[in-house]
Length: 335
Image (cartoon, rainbow, N blue to C red; front, side, top):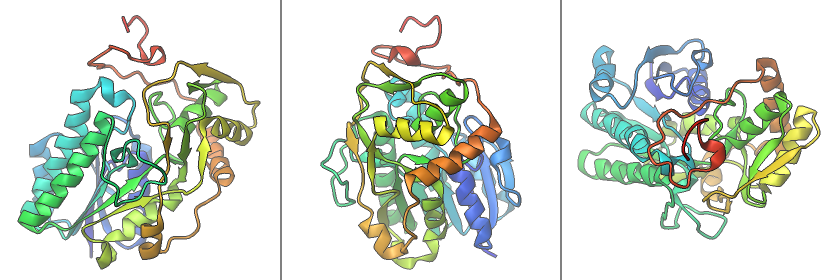
């Protein structure tokens, strides 16, 4: 039986990828430090191990009970905007943790390492973003993701470690952490709606993104190692149609059955327009047409209402408070 390792298995995308791996008949070992995920997200049938990929010795110990055919690396702290203010944490979690896995994958001759990068690696390129554009990341999160991409290419050249890279973007759906106030705008909007609070928007809300429902992303990632032509390739993955954040807020309000009440906060430093081309992934993987935003929001809203509101989680270790958006500052912080 094919045996695989999924990191970030208690998180949002990781739990869905693990579920898809089980459907493919794989034996799945899932790991998570539960810093941003929830144990109830771990699919039934996954062998769960609690620990952090930042701990190199712990990562090495994952192979003690046997080898893995494939490694799906999804563990990360994916907060582009906040990454400016948590630089050390960002690089330890997203870069050093990845290198720990790459080292062990090379040592144990893993057949394929599947890495979820991000369209944050592109920066402010002309849209739609295509895989042949030279990456120009503008925040530490994107820099860390691109560094891992470069390291995977180097590991393949020297150690013949096979890999596949996906660059998903703005993924939403059931099991997303709606308590994280620094990322996942749809989860933030829905949590605010549940509490009867207005939806908060940075700037004028005219910045645009394409929002990707989880079922349009996770199945492709899970079966990618079964597609030989995908090896040593980079793929954008997600939805095609961009929406403004204003339009998203209105659509989310409709899905939640509330009136759209909005508060505009001072703009923050971010790429204003980012959406990707998926021609390459569509040609190779031939996925089904992406789910319409209204339908995806309806599905997520049903799950969110059943779960109920959550108090916003405060990041405890801001490293550089200079220019930190006031809404992100902890109560009593000098920022």
